[in-house]
Length: 295
Image 1 (spheres, rainbow, N blue to C red):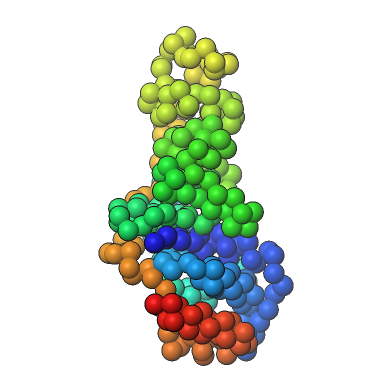
Image 2: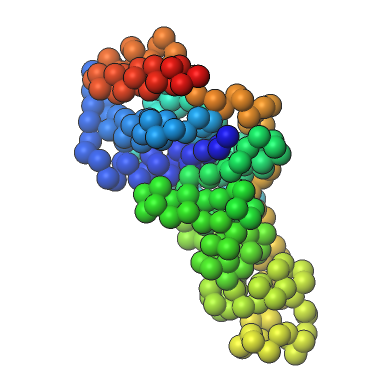
């Protein structure tokens, strides 16, 4: 079997800015949520059998306690934030496993689920459906891969190296020095993508970088400046790496079989009626019928 793990937060943001606004029978905005539901259904229609969706039910997480500048929900449109609970509720009614994160982030749930699914010998491949660079640290060979569904880009371990210049296990170190504007931490002064790639392709992790810049690999230009900048901001660099490191201890499922899509719950019809989406109901029922017939 293949396992598909979907970044529901990314999908909701993407659809919010890509599809027209739409209200349900009560006038509540549901355009983006309906778009994500349709997108997940299209994966089921194309044969996906084991699916899990992670969402940031609350944008803030434990990382906000570690670093005051970490991303918050400030500036996010209320019409978007209000659709998280809608999406989570209707996905569950559609029969899809959902992990709404409060203390952790959606990316932590996806990382934990990918690692857990890969332990099952019956799993051929785990697809992490998100383009987020943080999640590249989860990629393992050709077994756990990253799929950017919008651009139809599949990235295995060789693809991560080709894109970033470092192996997946070095991605947190890479982000620590380069910074991540989406998550709100700046990185280390003077360190760009090229310097990070050259250095971490040699030393893999921050602790392995020689304290004496004269011992650095000759391919790394401006070693003295980079060294001074890094070791003067050492504690910040370690903190930023902690922020960029995804957790693998989120409780997501006991067995991969829990992720198997078996069709919608009885409440799904009422959700579709409220969302004024009879076509969504028709397609889900047709997919359930085909799945039952195939089994």
